[in-house]
Structures are given as C-alpha cells and as structure tokens.
Image (tube, rainbow, N blue to C red; front, side, top):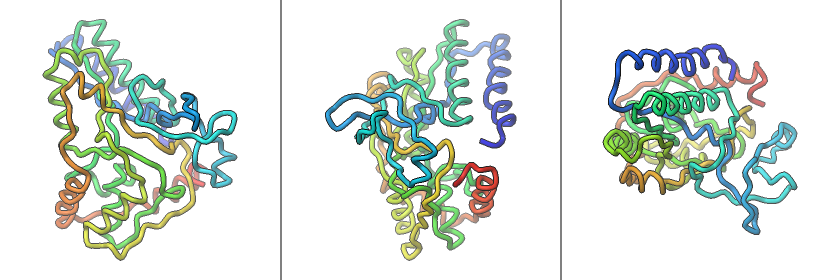
Length: 283
C-alpha cells in the first residue's frame, strides 16, 4: 500500500510487457496466477438469508474494534464460501493489480486466440516459501517468528477466516488448467474448500513445530486494506478442471513443520509493522 509505483510497475505494466511479447512469440496456452484478494470481503448473507454484495468496514468501525462486517443497514452477516460470480471489491493496490493482470490476460487470450485461464489462488502455503519476507503468506510469516522464538503477531482479534491451500494442490490445479480445454476463458478459484481462523492457524503451527509454549500475540490493531473473511467455493474448479484438493491441513502443516526444522529466518515482521504504522496503514 506504500509502494504504489513499484507494485503497479511490476504487476500491471510487467504483465503488459509480457503480453506484448507474446504477440510475437506465440504460446499454445496461457495461465495467469490471480488472487482471492480481488473479492475483498467474501460472500455473505443476512441471518434471514438475504445475499449481501457490497461489504466494506469503515475506519470508524475498525477504530472501535468492531471487526465483523455488517450489512449497510447494520444487520449481522453470515459468511459463506465465495464463488467466482461474486463481483470484485478491490480493497488494496495489490488487489487492483491482480485484477488488472487477470483481466488483461483473459482479454489478450480472447483477442489473440490464445486459450487462457486465470486461477484465483487463496492462501497458499508449503515448503520453500520465503520466510524472511514479512509480506509473504501468513503461515510462512508465523513459521519465521516461531523459528526465532517469537510469538506470531495477529491483527484484529485473530478470528478472521481464510482458506489455506497446500502448494501441492495449487501445482496440481495449474497442471489441470493447462490440460483442460474447457478451462479456457475462465477465472477459477483454487482453495482447499475449507476455512480456519488466523488464530487457530498460529496455535496449530506452534504445536506442530514443537513451540506450543509460544502463544500468538493478538495485537488488536488493524491494517488498512485487510478484509475479514474470505474462503473458496471450489465447485467450478471441480467441474471445469476435475480438481480435488488432496492435502489435509494437518498433513500440510506437518510437512511445513518438518521443512522448517532445517531453516533460518531473518525476522522482519516488527520492522514492517513499524513501517506500516509510520505511514498510517496499521492502527
């Protein structure tokens, strides 16, 4: 959110450069890594079943520590798996960039007759993920903190829900998308089909890595651009790709823990939090 020029240059302009090159160097298929971030808040309905599309949390609400979104008329919401039909709600520069990438690639594919698929990845985790980057996946961030004997830092109250999907399942989805003609022209969710809270993930990772005595630190602060709940409806992935997630979260975290045993991590989380706070993006 504070490297706007760099993000747009790498993500949006970089994709444009690639697509121009592909006009001269034809490919048989194109696959773009999109993101669940384009949804903003996930699919929700009121307690009486009324669908709610446009959900945003105001700064005033967040300042009061009222974390859960409500409908525009103040009603409580129930969150459900988010389908591809949910309209985008772009809450950050990153989300905007990922939407640019997705739409540019799909437009390019239809214009130049290149079969193209966009996969909207949810929260990917697994071995070999960067541990020293404070903006990488949350499991890698928590793993790096635990390796240094420090508690995972959690924004808000830790009850925000996400869909954590193993990199092995993501790789399988990519292969399927390149092989299945019926995937052409589609944007498809890739997730586990389940959800967990961020606090739960931190506690489970601490236990499985042998650091069960290190409890996560719930800061009660929030970041501008964060969303509360979003997890995947993977019905289209099953239908169009024949995709079925195979790595259970417990097994995936055990694999991650085994890999972490031989790793070292430079902990940049606290300095990143200070940077965000200095710019008014973490409060």
